[in-house]
Image 1 (cartoon, rainbow, N blue to C red):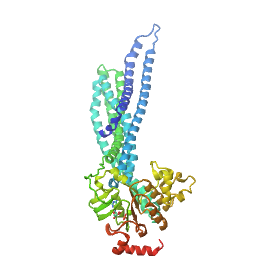
Image 2: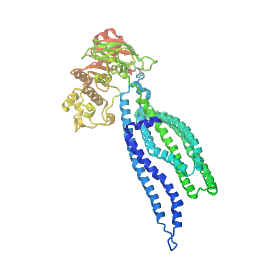
Image 3: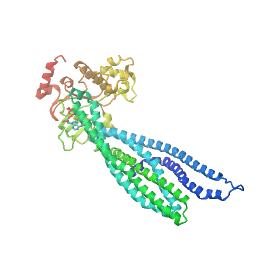
Image 4: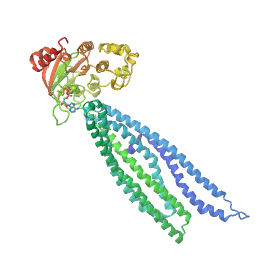
Amino acid sequence: MFLLFKYFKNYKLRVFFTTIIKIIGTLLELAIPLILQYILKTVIKNVINNPDPYGNYDITPVILYGLLMVLCAFLFVVFNVIANRMASKTSTLIVEEERNKLYKKIMNLTLKDIDDITIPSLVSRLSTDTYYLYNSLNTLQRLGIRSTFLFIGGIIVCSFLDVKLTLVFYALAPIVLILILIISKIGIRLFTKIQNKGDSLVRVVRENITGARVIKALSKEDFERNRYNKLNKEIFDLEIKSSYPMTLLNPIINYILNIAMCAVLVIGAYEVTKTDLDVATVIAFISYFTIISNSIVSISRIFEQVSKGYASALRMKYVLDIKVEHIKNTPRYSDAFIEFRNVSFSYNKNGENAITDINFKINKGESLGIIGSTGSGKSTILNLIMGFYDYFSGDVFILNQDIKSLNLKDIAEASSAVLQTDILFNQSIKENLIFDKDISDDEIIKVLKDTDAYEFVSKFPDGINHVIAAKGNDLSGGQKQRLLIARAILQNAKILILDDSSSALDYKTDAIIRKNIKKYDITTIIVAQRVSSVMNQTKIIVMDDGKEIGYGNHDDLLKLCKEYKLIYDVQMGDDSNA
Ligand code: ADP
Ligand code: MG
């Protein structure tokens, strides 16, 4: 709960002024019944006691005090509106800042953390949870301050009016507060559950949308629909369950308050007849009772809102608190530009190894080809070179240095990659290629020519300023790959990584692009299923089931690695002119 108050830390002044304005408004609201009491008890008595010589009453004072009540009511509304606008602005500023922090953090998470939390959950933490946080911060400032002051101020004024009647409140307050606390505790728990289930729903929907073609092709619609319906039903049931305590709260509190109201009336009636308590005071007291009752009901509503915001704040905090830690060793060097020494790695701490005992070395400007069946560990080797995971055993060197002694920024800038999952964005080709880098159009066009992409790009009326559809869906697979390779080259990194990124290109284009890449001073790693794509690289690794079953140049492998020879014979027999 206090977690929520921490958010106001940088906005103390704004919150302070909001509070002051709210308090003035609340005091005006509290003054109204007092004025009423004064009119009933004193003003009217004076008017009755002082008729003019003709026996008429001058009711001007009553009207004036009545106008004073109207003025208080008017100003109270004005102050409230001003304070509420300030509160909304403050909440917007805070949530904006938190969202940015969260976004930056997510961008810096390691793949391992993203795998753990899952992408849909991160998305809903950025959207739904920030929304609930906004609501709760808003409620705290708008209703929280007002209700608390109405409650406390009301009880104080009542104590001055009549102590005996006020005792009813003192008896009541603890019961109601305990009730609110218990119910909001249950609420928070159920609400967190709903949020987490919501993540799964987002995931299923997302998978269904992105995988729509696959689902249709495999006639999996019914299966997917059931999966969605089941989750939806679970969330529905949870929502119903979590609404029970909250919906019970208001009637129970109203019930208790009504009993108390009866008590006040009975005690009031008794005292008016037996003591010097006057009717005007009882009427004022009942007005305050209504004010205090309403404030209790809105405090319970605040708890509901704040419980949701708190659950969301915890979910956001969980991500923000993840330590993006990078084990930093004292620098060690290799004579090779990129080297793996006895590297083994498993994605899950105790799971099966994705790669086992990998060794290779390449010098600056040389190239490495990796070939092997799907799931043999090719992409995993690339993940380690790019520094996505650092809990491997053995040694990885890039830029001649132990990767664990480099800082994250250097690792990130060392390589640029075309990965199997890479996408193009709904922006112009130029923006897609250079992001926010400052690169001249001539240079872009040169690289596009080298990646054999300029031919189709120049056909667009607006050339490189042509805006492509989301994910590049209006381009062919081969066109996308050409642009992605151009993008990777334009990043001007020292290492270029191509993960199966020429699969949609014909042999000839693939060969031309590979030849052109050699013009750039860049160390290249090419993962491919085709021998033709790797055979001209300085070194080649043949992977099978996470193990390196062949390592050397093309000629070595033809002699020494029978699997490589087999792939070569089969593929080159198919297409001998490649
Ligand atoms: P390739 O690129 O050769 O097709 P990968 O390197 O992607 O193969 O995968 C090697 C093994 O590691 C496979 O068994 C695969 O299921 C597993 N694997 C790949 N990525 C992950 C991941 N993010 N989490 C867990 N296991 C993974
Ligand atoms: Mg792969």
